[in-house]
Length: 98
Image (cartoon, rainbow, N blue to C red; front, side, top):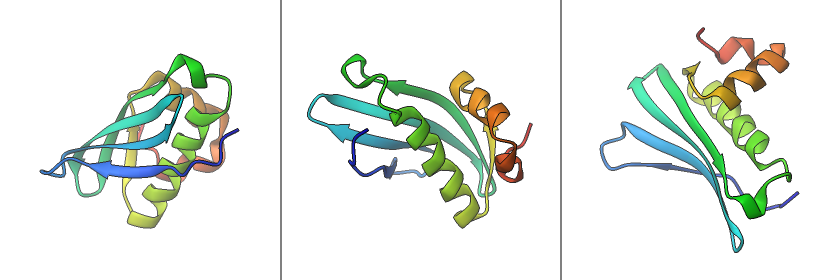
């Protein structure tokens, strides 16, 4: 698995964002929409084919969970991958709004 950092990026208006891992072989990202200061929608997780199988998508979800706990917001898991990870990790229940 790559040691590249997970970076949080926001658009200029602060309504859309993503957690991203950028590598020479491609990009892994988890995108989200901000609905209120205390609620976001995780809407998509994508990993370039050259990076699949390295656990990058899970690292993105873990970064989202950590950020939600630190910033005090809850997550609506619209993305099927994020929702599947939510079901596998009951210890994350405190940050999900389902």
